[in-house]
Length: 105
Image (cartoon, rainbow, N blue to C red; front, side):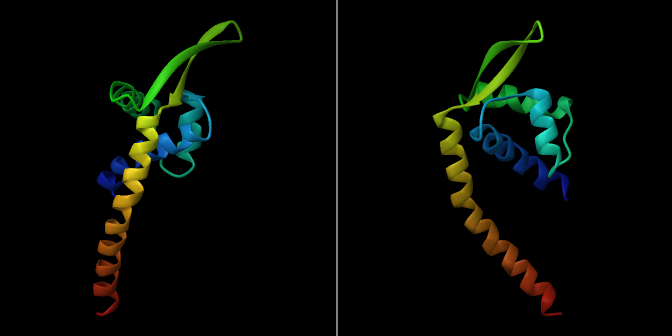
């Protein structure tokens, strides 16, 4: 997959993942990596940006004697997903146009 396209999709994939339930960094990496290869060094700046934008909040919870930082989607994050899905119809139209141009050859 093209790097720029992947970068554009990761944020929404992370938000959708959090819409299924709160999660922590390593777990998010494992889940997202099943469809889009991602490392923790890529994930954490995205999570920080989502937090700054008010799309997620964080809280800490003890796990095996250590504090683990969890991420929780917020209303702003859900609205962002909905906006993305509305925009995707335009992306699909472009995709179909490009696909037809190749098939017509």
